[in-house]
Image (cartoon, rainbow, N blue to C red; front, side):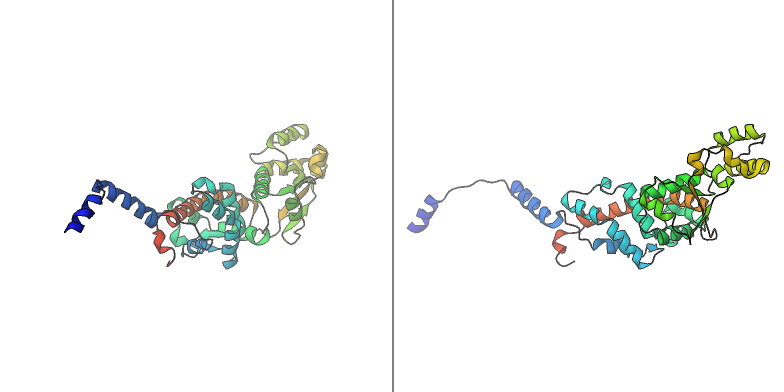
Length: 286
């Protein structure tokens, strides 16, 4: 009894609020259970092999896609994730060279317009198969030049990048044109109208038709009206237009820019769930 009393006298009385204690315990528990996880590089396998995606290059396309975005994973793990971590141009380029696309069954509503164009996948396959190293900037330049010529052809000049210059060497894909029409197609409608005035030809609504009217009026002598910097370029046509035309390439550019936005949002949401939506305690067993 004396020992008990002595122990009580020597003990220190501590007052506490039970609500505060529970709050502290809950906070510690939440950090353990719901803490931000590092994303493993293999998480892209789960994303790509979900059944929603395919690639015009087969399984090789999935590997190319992962290689293109591996730097994104490093940034995600070094800081919290945000949509801006995936640059839209980078996503466009990853799709362009990997050929990844949504299968029709899982097309998001924003992409249902693709069902109306039966040629876009063929054009996609044409680019992904034949230009595995093409950059976003180079592809956009080709598209711009096709647009300037109403999809008829595009040109390569001596001061272009190595990537564009190498494209001109694909003789099995392109044929070179050295006639007057090829040079006229590189001019603007304003420039063509000036030539029409000089040769007494009637301009048409499109660049191609206007060029044809000029040729019909004065033949190959139309080259005399083409600036030397234009006539000296190499003009290229797609050899097999059953596979793809210039207009198909133009449409593909528009489609891929839309698809890139949707895939970026989809991937961002997926990464968010990987980082925050799964119990951290499951990481060892998951």
